Image (cartoon, rainbow, N blue to C red; front, side, top):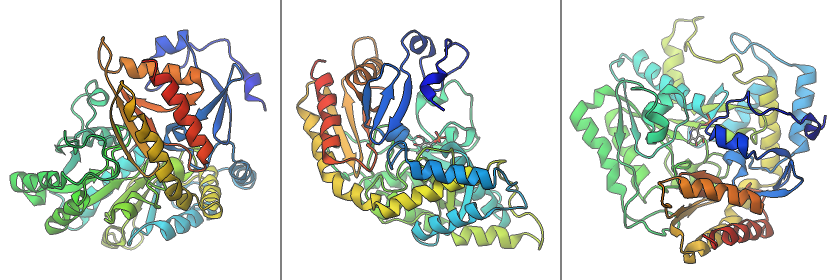
Length: 440
Ligand SMILES: Cc1ncc(COP(=O)(O)O)c(C=O)c1O
């Protein structure tokens, strides 16, 4: 089937997510194909992918291995109910993921997106405390300037104002530590040396609300969508210490970081802190089939499963498509590609070149700050007259016309190329970015 042949005469009926719908429909950007590092537009132009889609297409586009694995799975088993039944593909994928996860994060719970993985982890945290007789632990600690997806749990613990302000009060009992953006962190490459003490905000909440009211803390190891804020040296370690001292669970939201983005398998590996749960999605299936997952420590899994009577359901949570065959097949094929092409090692090896190219943007007048770690980086652009976000929106369109795709959050440009990127691709991405930004 040729996607290009499926041209539509109407854009009107679809309400697009996180999009200026009226503007888009007047000035559409339609992608009709994707292969390797490039998209093809409906005008036949090539656009290099500087953001791995939305951080998900780590192994590059159009991977026939994944398409064939999904096709084969669908021909053999299109669907099996995940409640009270199973199929081999999701069990095998769990085994493969558990081989990679740090510490005793050996149990994998499936869902369909990063947002669902966050809400799943929060619910598991509540269930863990409840089954141990500490059901009064209902508070969640999140952080300012965090993104944890769009469902109500994730929204409540996150800290991006535009994502929250139209949607009411969220979960009661969600409280927020300060973010880790400090004025002295200008143009810091890697981890900032200062700011670890910001983790003591958690201690202040313990002192203010009582440790026994707090269920879990959730942070992105690197705050991704909001602009690549890398944790200060010692910050995540301090969070771990306070959690351990107070019976609080630590959740790392690795929806972006997991599977090589930081140059190691997980952000947890890069920053040498093992949480009690890790959320993941995106590169889990290379973005091909929606899938999210939570890796859960045996401490948490055992507590919940052993607390239930023999034969009883232990956790009243799950999705119709938890670990569905097509997604599991895509996940397995993606893991094979990662293993065979050593994509995590490749990311680590390419990171210095990537960060050099990113930090070279510093001389551009419009660039006000740069951050980066592994194969993830951000450059802040000076806001234009007319308000925050205007320059970002303009830049996104100019990049597309110039043949490069990045993610924009407000006036911050995020770069996270597929991990298959060669040096020539990094050069092409940043040459195109520079060409556009030098005209601002
Ligand atoms: C850290 C983090 N958590 C959760 C999500 C939500 O994932 P999804 O869009 O798959 O629901 C994202 C998406 O970018 C993310 O970056």
